[in-house]
Image (cartoon, rainbow, N blue to C red):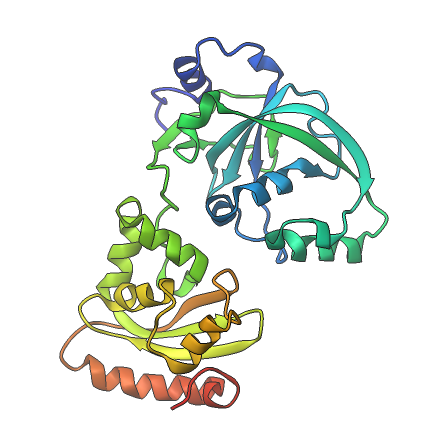
Length: 300
């Protein structure tokens, strides 16, 4: 890597030149791949309080010697996205909390923790958000360095590698890697200009998609064609008016929830005059494979 133009410490000095006691602040990079833990970048955008709740609970006294923390979320490779500065105002020790007392998005994680280690004692910290660096939140991406597994560090001389629009969720992944909750989709459609890679990539092709209702275990297979491909078709899901009778009824009954409904791609089909025939054939095949007419939302 070439010599960086400036580091995160340089940026703090520029934005807040009166920031004192910075040597008593840690940088922390949250990256959690456990199946019970939600996507943390998505969690920040959709429920910041839940992410802050997640940060406040630790298995060891990680923040006891700190005046504060600069909080980052792990991105692919060695990168990390700054999400906020927090002053440490105290802590307490307790066993794993009752899942019913934590934010809904984290209950699966806490249920798993109570099941696996019911008597484990953990640290719960009192954080106060430091608004002096609010202008940098969700904008600054740094290179965390070769010690990526060391998720809490005193070193702040991390190269700044990107400055983002604050409403960006990062680049759209490969089609086969997309698992897009309707809550996240709604955010992307509200902030379309900040997420052009999602709009452009999902507009470029059509194909067959799968809607998974993770709360109820039901599926729906549909097709996306036309000039705007998946993006144009999926915008209707963000508005909860899809034209699919069973799906829309589930929305109206509040049985299909944006946070537990996920869209993914089964087949990609280039747009063109012959695409409709292929889409119809593939849609029927996937309905039969997944039995979505019998146990899902498909009615034809």
